[in-house]
Image: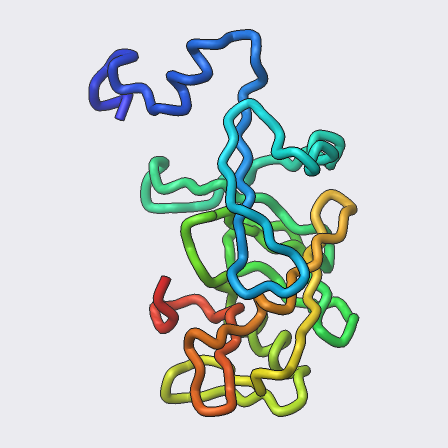
Length: 197
């Protein structure tokens, strides 16, 4: 917006907050809640220049370099980072070895787009096959182009960034919202429009 307006009147809300207080650190944090989690009941929070209580150690985590990815225009950029080499561990505890479909991405590393506004992680088809193809009872539905798996099947998937392991909660690997009989839909979906956000 600032580019179109040509002056500070087009600054974003976040930029204006940072400009008002030059002594605070310029960061925001997002803590998402999860309905139906029997073990952890977080209340979703958005903070600006403050840490969510109980998550203070986030400042000691590795800082990741933002990766520019080829797009049609420079304004199409998202927050994107690189996984570690072989940085996705499948439900069988073994690394998933695939290369990124993003041009010029380093070998054995994937480009991960950080997007808090999309419900389901989208990955290349080879990645969703490598995740759900290792799960007993999982099937690929060629009509909907989605993996289905028994709803009582728990998956453990881990992403590696900056040498740190970030396990994905089993509730985030399948979705009963898109249930089909006794089968749930694999939430880590192939790239494409088949799963709504």
